[in-house]
Length: 389
Image (cartoon, rainbow, N blue to C red):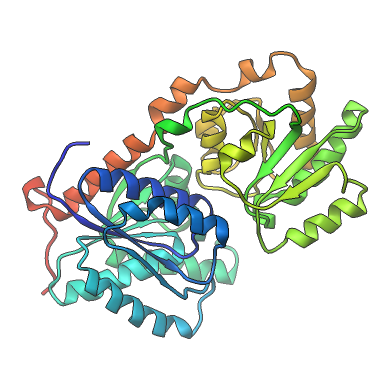
């Protein structure tokens, strides 16, 4: 990555779990290595030992530090106090770039950045939705409110970054054609993620890796697993790996269906460890933007079976036989059965690793994001931002 004027970059997001956290960690590492000062501001009430270990991995790259404040998922009166506290912390860090990720991170970054701009402080305000508010329906009252807020916040936004074509198109359809600068920059994974991970001798047939909440489809995984056993006429084995608010409910579902001994549950762990436990990775999400688990699975040489949602078809191919109808456990079971019963299914269906690497690389992602930062901040790039009067 070419050296340019060093920037002070602060990433704001709510919960340090899942794809947003992975996205930010990669940007932090790449941009720090390129000579920039980088920091994180996120929620103090979510995450556990696993997330703490991930923070430990990137602490050497956080020259602007790790700032954690309580940030609720839903809107509440306490947001006013949080906003004021956040503004003071951000001001003390003197960032050139405030990049908000997810709905709450986007609000914090853009409002704090705008307050700084009123005080004639030059700072770029960027927002990446990562799905988030774009999952809301325009037909609901809550959806109308959230999507109208997204439109209003464009006035406080210097650039919108979309992580896939699906997210860009959904924003235009639900929020409206953007009235500020936009850039399509795909999520990407690092060089070390493009190494095949062999399965262990005691591997199970299928794994689910991710948050344990209905949006991600763990209930569909359980239902489809039972149907796959019936299609093949034999018992199978699986693991659900992750944490989340509905963990106990999924465990009860498995026990009620007599699957408690054939589907195990493990807490969140590093994906390299999880991928060693099976060849077949199931991603049964009801909604997504551009999930990292699909990219990581392909980089590790795994067989992916996924819902046709979000940007997943942009990775696997629009006509991929690995894609299933979202929310349809019968279709999911059909493809799960095919992966086990059809010789050569993986080789015929999965995209080649080199093709994935050419587009979905963290080095490419970080380079393009940094180029956008410089366009907004650096006068030498000919894209200087006006300073509020």
